[in-house]
Amino acid sequence: MDHISIKELLSKKPIGTTATVKGWVRNFRSNRFIALSDGSTIKTLQAVVNFENTPEEVLKKITVGACIKVTGDVVSSQGAGQDLEIQATGVAILGESNPEEYPLQPKKHSMEFLREKAHLRPRTNTFGAVLRIRHSLSFAIHQYFHERGFYNMHTPIITGSDAEGAGEMFNVSALDKKNIPLTEDGEVDFSEDFFGKETNLTVSGQLEAELGALALGKVYTFGPTFRAENSNTTRHLAEFWMIEPEVAFADLDDNMDLAEDFLRKVIKFALDNCADDIEFLSKRLEDEEKTKPQAERSEMSLKDRLEFVADNNFRRVSYTEAVEILRNSKPNKKKKFQYLINEWGVDLQSEHEKFLVKHFGCPVILYDYPATIKAFYMRLNDDEKTVRAMDILFPGIGEIVGGSQREERHDVLLQKMEEFGIDPKELWWYLDTRKFGTCVHSGFGLGFERLVLFVTGMTNIRDVIPFPRTPGNADF
Image (cartoon, rainbow, N blue to C red; front, side, top):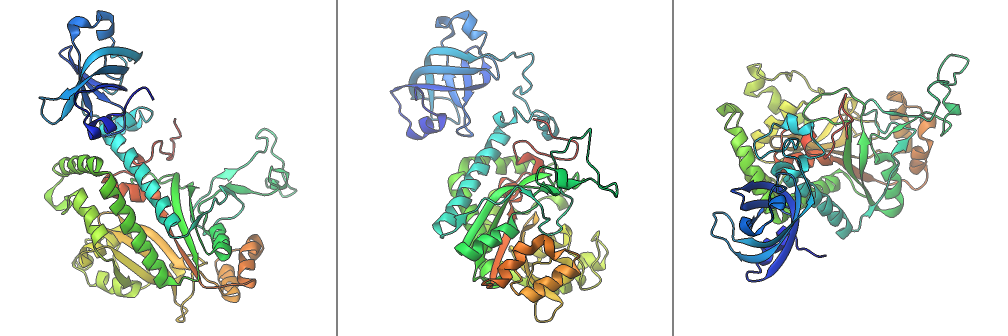
């Protein structure tokens, strides 16, 4: 390439050499000092222009948002917060930016405003940092599984089954909307559709990943999933990415061991490889926390929170024990919880999960949940009341991982499907794996955006994916 990235230049510090950089103007002051960013790092590079030797028509086009090429001498900088700068000997305008129209002027913008400018927000410090961390986490996840003998499996995005009754699904159809074929009963005749049956966008690749694990031993998926729930919260998206490992010959204890080790290693990778971005986002979160009442502020900085998870063993607690702790807790007795815990068998809410993490002072793995509140494919315990399920709870965010030992017994699985109102004929292929060489196996699911949310300290899940898909919003 005919230029060097700002990250590489700042790393190598080639003082006394000539270099060429390209990027976007963040600021241009005194007709002399350019703050240049190319996205390779949170840091900008200062390029110093000799305005007396630079054509007036070039100077006029060095505006915020413009894309430029700078060639010059790399010298030590006298300015605060920077080791070096470029004394420009040549500046070329690669792409102009009208300062009257460019929306990202050098000032603080609200998150709501930036969501409306999602095509440009990666140029800001905050979203540049988030996207670089997102990439590093994605790389670390693939690296982790590859090094441990897992095979990456691409499961269907278009599916004819609902993996777990996990929520409303997006219908996929190629029928002519102006001439929809109907059955004698007046229902849509999906036999005339592209796939010959009703199909949807997947809510999970888990069931298909199980098929892979029962042949290859260890597999994982990393792909998009979809939920058509009309949920406008800071924790939900209609389109998001899921990581779902499935492992043959692994029971619930093995599953918990894998999930804990996986999370700690991936977060440690981010700490080691995204230090500048995490430091910036930690400072940003600290400033944001100052605007909150004291009682609502986090007890730990972002970096401390990440190190807390990476360095501490997770506490394993049964659902039954957790319910007792919650039932006898001060917030429950004083009716401070929005959802009071009065009996065994209730589904835990985010407020309960956050309390448990604070109570134990470390990440928590809850296991052995009531069968009635968990999916049909989770292995039934001998008490016939609970299933071999587990959820991992993180500070400040609550549940981040959900998983289980899968029900490998054909007769029990068939019975549970009937109890859940699932037609066995729809999942004949899933049942086949319990007839032909079944074995104990386990897996879990991690919503990738939840992980990115935790590592970046962002407070809205719409701000950790480049182009969020939410009710009423499919722009860009």
